[in-house]
Image (tube, rainbow, N blue to C red; front, top):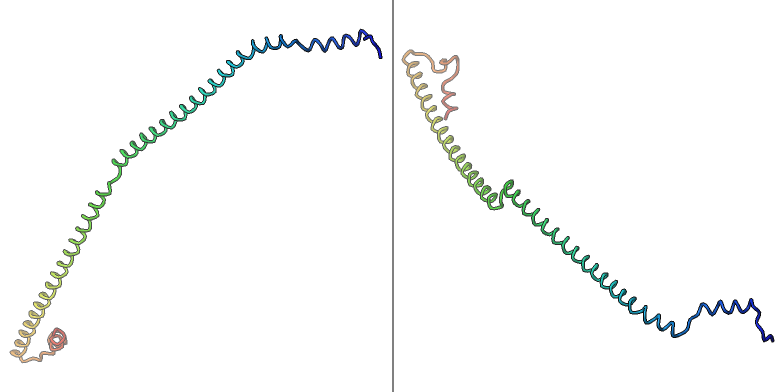
Length: 166
């Protein structure tokens, strides 16, 4: 074994010693650096918490704005709908009025049909009566003249007309 170290080996060993420090120096450095780093970390955490709070505030604000816009839009829509469209009660009242008018129209139609039917019957009776009178007068005139009843009216037999009317 060699008791001496060569210069080259000594420089390498010394180089390694320069990378190390004394414990007292390290402790002093630790006491001077750690508290400011700790304070800085606390400030970073506080900023991070503030950012999270601001983010939540922005979300709440955005939500409130959206709700307000939706309420305003809904209010505008409702006002426009009230101007343009009928309410359900108005529609129901209108439909009820229309049904009543329709029923009144049906009743009036039935009344008119009954009147027309009665008038037609009356007219038919009157017409038949007038025809009978005319036939009776024609018969009487024919009898007075002495001609046949069947020869009156261009060869039409009056007895047949009378039978058809009855």
